[in-house]
Length: 305
Image 1: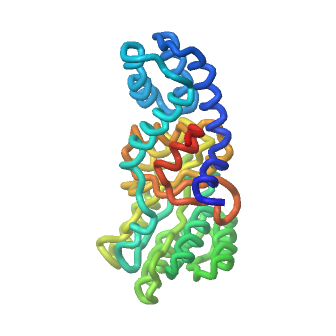
Image 2 (image 1 turned 90 degrees about the vertical axis):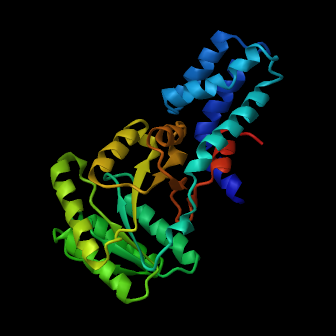
């Protein structure tokens, strides 16, 4: 299965809703305000966000004056192109993260978004690119997170820095970065806690982690990546907002797109926060995490050719 086919399979739930909705709305060749309003509502229902939906609607207002629409497929092709153009500035090559050696990454996200699993999948991706990977288990609040990350380290044959549950996360982060620097590691990914219900403690924890990393190198961490669960819909926007108050986010990974019919949330996130998307998760298998591709995403979201 090629990458485009994987995108189409992963986004099938979202694309079915959108493409069938568009075909119903644009069944007539004449476009009027009522049809455009229905189109806008459809886009909003897919979680694209009001601003994005309004902008995309404007692309089709000219059809009221210039010409009749030939078919709903014409709408889908035009919309796919516009969505691709909209998302392209936020497409960032995963391998571009490897700008220094070692590259130290902080991986953040609320509990339940698939953060630790995503670290494992990212580790596999980098290992497949012949990079030497190190994992750091700094989510010491949850024993299960440490165990899960250790399983991933064995699965992808990478080393792991860990400590006992309840130990100091900053100490684990420091040891991870120091080990990476001393042992010719290409990429070190540090798992962190996601207890948003206690923001003050979490903020203090992150501050301490950042401070100890900068003692090794003022540039550390090189990347701070936030993991988002697409099935949470508009709540994902709140998570970006809250984590942005704690740290400067440099990129996003959006998981579980195969489990939602509202893949338009990707557009809403890009519109509001202007943050690059590094990868998207569209399945449970270890190779179901893919580098984000704006054109493939747009074509898959809208079932265009």
